[in-house]
Image 1 (cartoon, one colour):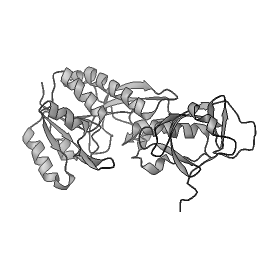
Image 2 (cartoon, one colour):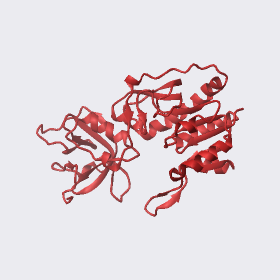
Image 3 (cartoon, helix red, strand yellow):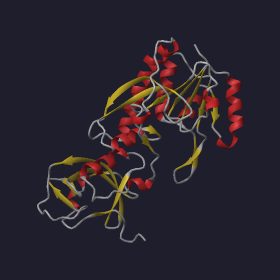
Image 4 (tube, rainbow, N blue to C red):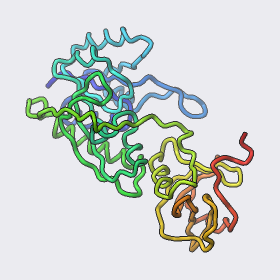
Length: 317
């Protein structure tokens, strides 16, 4: 078996590590993001990958951008045969990628060259895609642009959130590692260059990206809500209170009054509906700030005609 170093930080990374362990290919070392403050108390928390490695007494290298030369020397000393990365979250320069004699591989949760970059699953949902997948590629110095070794298609259901789809992508990534990595090591896979003219890109999202504008169409808002669930989350304001919008679905239900402005709420048969710039959206689960998440069916009776979602609170400067 080759001497392997793994690079990753997320739950998807852990899924790939689980499969490598099943294949009898435990990494000699694991590179991950450093511990970072989380939550209101700003407690330092390790990545899921670091926890996985420490439980198996595998050496962990926390990436430190301010000491790139030390990082490089640590990798040189490992003399690895193969690098495998999955949801690592950092750029690796060419001199690092060139170190292992059997190459540097990356698992990416999209059908490359579509949706290169930091948030392929979220972006695919925001764009209303119904088909995505995972790709195993050879890495080069550009972002997600290396030759593809194998791919596996994944259907995106119309109401699936990015959190739900990331779990699916993790399972599919395990399958791709299980089937394609042994083939690659045996020299049985032919790398296929990506068509750069067909490349699209995804970016890192911020909390502000979750602000809902109900003047947009119902499908756009529905895709925003599910695409940004769980992070950073879609939100709006109701009577000055911030409301997180957890889930929704498209509907053919229409209000009795045709002149209701976007954001207007109407309730019918325990359904909680919002008028959009085009069409109507049914909200299924919401959460007021500092409160528990609730089903809209349980609170629909509280909202009468005249209630309306706003993109900004009335008191916001």
